[in-house]
Length: 267
Image 1 (cartoon, rainbow, N blue to C red):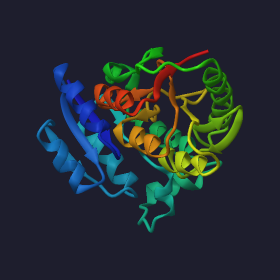
Image 2: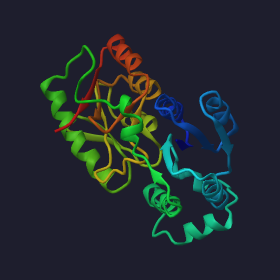
Image 3: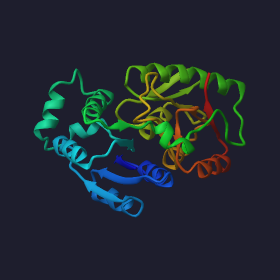
Image 4: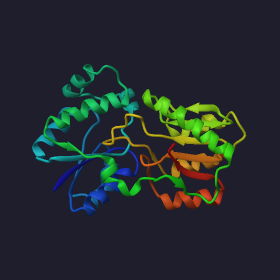
């Protein structure tokens, strides 16, 4: 069976391509950079590179390909609309009908156009199930009672901003919010929060309450874990069952070496 892989930023598309191939799928990659296309060429059957503004060309290619399944993997950041993109007529038509330009709003509009072609968009929870973090403490370090209070506090705050489609990360210490994610991303949110204390803080990353499992599940990996450790954080927590982890064993080893708590939490 042929499956189109919409490849965004990061290493998640590689994991998705490997997973699809292991299940016997023919993988056709649609991506937006030559470099990512090269990274995926060895584990896919075909690679097509488009400009981000070529919605009409992308939809025409999907229609002509005859594929019936598609999966999104990687980051499709809303900051792309701030770039000097050349939008085709279809892209302009889609944008003109949006109620706002929030990330989810744009994704829903584009996925609706894909579904009108009779294509099913697969859940990332199914394609990338081997990367999902289940509830538990992965590090040797265990959270103290006070740290668990911060985890619960930060979790509720993070779910609040996630429900407003603002961000999915909160930095907290002593039941005080130090930083909330907006457009800057996880790493910069951590750095901003760390400015208000001398380490020992808690970070939590959650899924959106109305998360669409077809795209944009929260993802963590060594880049984020390293940024956290550099600021002397104490507890790094993610929402269990809805967070994807890249290089999980490397993350666990790093947490143990740097003596901080690494856990997946659910109330």
